[in-house]
Amino acid sequence: MTVDALDARILDLFAAEPRVGVLEASRRLGVARGTVQARLDRLQRDGVVRGWGPDVDTAAIGYPVTAFATLQIEQGSGHTTVAAALAAIPEVLEVHTITGAEDLWCRIVARSNADLQRVIDQVVIVQGIQRASTVIALAEQIPHRVLPLLRAATSK
Image (cartoon, rainbow, N blue to C red; front, side, top):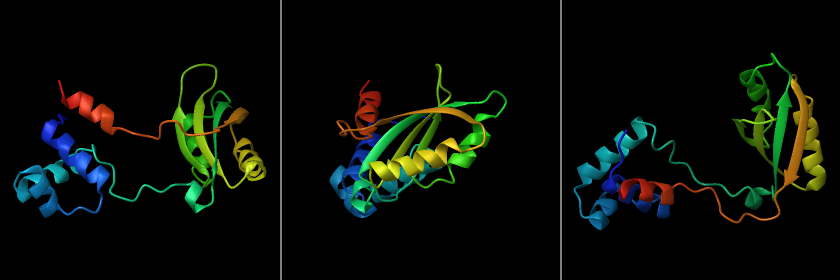
């Protein structure tokens, strides 16, 4: 899938102003409404845009503690089986298979440090998890972002 400069401009606008309509976007970008709609449809169909939902701040909904856990799983347990069990824990926001001494990396949120202990206790009792190591984030320096990468990829 190739993303061009117009795609990047469209995504940049909708990221900055998610509630802007297609007609208004076409006016601001100087292209036809049909072009904007067709591009948005293609970007979503091709998996470039994974969703249009709101970007929820976990601290604002009562989960100000963020932690990262690396998990070592038992040989033969399978990443998929363990990840499926972790998906049942609402505070586990992401799970990635990683390289190195550990097998999985998780981003976890909690209401407090004491609540984080409760969440970690839920994580470590998952069948197949052998060991967990957790660090608490003190501050977010750069939030999750992809627009700078998109701009760089389309400026070549």
